[in-house]
Each structure stands twice: as structure tokens, then as C-alpha cells.
Length: 142
Image 1 (cartoon, helix red, strand yellow):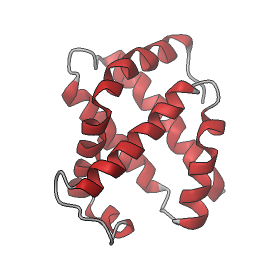
Image 2: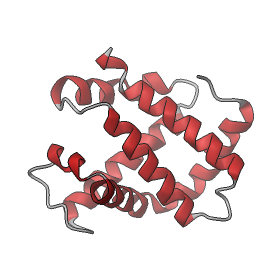
Image 3: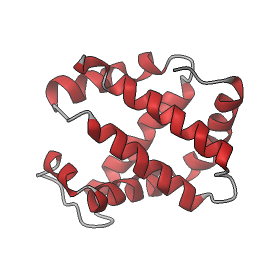
Image 4: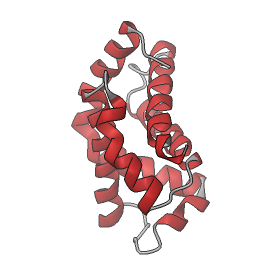
């Protein structure tokens, strides 16, 4: 699945706004993930998963930074996320379905934070982009 020029432009444009709130968006995304899909907490037994905890904020920042790496390398997402894919597949052994759950929570968070920008067209572009990201992250599982 490849992104069109229009979809790429939407992603890059919105990323400019998202990146200014990256830490907050990352934290809120993880909070949504853990509340909506509590089974995902099993990968973080050593974390304080209370809303706004330092560990949640730090990991949320890492998650959004990885999305930012994908945006910056929108023409080579697989290359940008190769090491992250290996880490999650071989070392952390994260169930690949969790990438789709995380993607959904990120989309909800972005929609809530940027309602005027998150048009139907933007939603479709971001959904497709995050599907590509999820697919890349599960590449090593195949």
C-alpha cells in the first residue's frame, strides 16, 4: 500500500502541528490504549501506568518520535522503522495486533486535539499512513 502525493502532503502538514504537542499526544495515546485495551498492559509490568506518570510520558514520547521518524522518511518508512520492528519482534515479542490498537488510539487522540484539521480526507490519509506503519512494524514477524 502506497500513499498518494495528496496523502503524503496531508500527513506532513499535520505532523507540523502534532510534533509541537508530541509529548502530550504520546502520553494521551498510551493512556487511551491502556484504558481501552487493558491486555496491552502486560508488556509493561515494570511501568507505573497511572495517568501522567513519568514512565508513561517517556514512553509516549518515544512512540510519537517513532511516528515522526516515519513521517520524516515517508518515502522509506520500512528503513526508518527497521530497528524498531526487530526490537518489537525479536526481543520484546509484542503481539503484532497491538500496533493496530496503538494506531487507532493515536488517531483518536489526534482527532480530539485537532478537530478542525482532522477532516474526513485527513482521517483517511492518517489511517492509511498508520496502516503502513503497523505493517512495517510487523514485517519481522513474517
